[in-house]
Length: 159
Image (cartoon, rainbow, N blue to C red; front, side, top):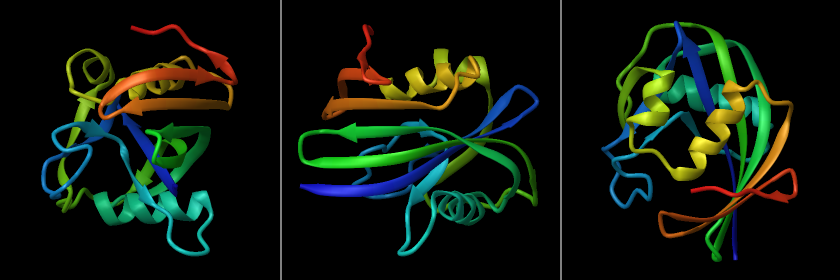
C-alpha cells in the first residue's frame, strides 16, 4: 500500500480559476484533464510550504493570500493520497510556462460545466464556491471512475 501527501490550490482572479491542462507528462494519470496547481510534498514540508513551493514552481506566482479549505483523501485500492486543498485570491509575479501542461485562466462556471476534470473535483469545487467550512472528503476511484464520495464521514449521492 502506497501513501502520498499532496497539495492542490485553486487560484482565483476576476471570477476565474487558474487551471492547468495536463498534457506534457508521460504516464500521467491526469493526462488531458484540467486541475488546479499543486503537487507532492518534499521531506519536512508543511502543507503551506508545499503549496507555496508548488505554485511558484509550476506557475511563477507567489501566493500572498491563501487558505486551507479541506482535506481530500483519494483511494483506488492500491494508492492512498491525502491532498490538502487550498484556495488563493492574491499573488505576486507573472505566469511562466509550466512543464506539466498549459496554464489558462478559465471562468469558474466553465470549469464545472465544460472542462474535462476528475468527477470528484466537481464535488470539492462546489464546496469551494459555496464557501463551505473546512471539510474532509474521501473519494474512491476505480481507474478514472468515481465509485464513492464521503463528505465529513457521510456518504454522498452523486451522478
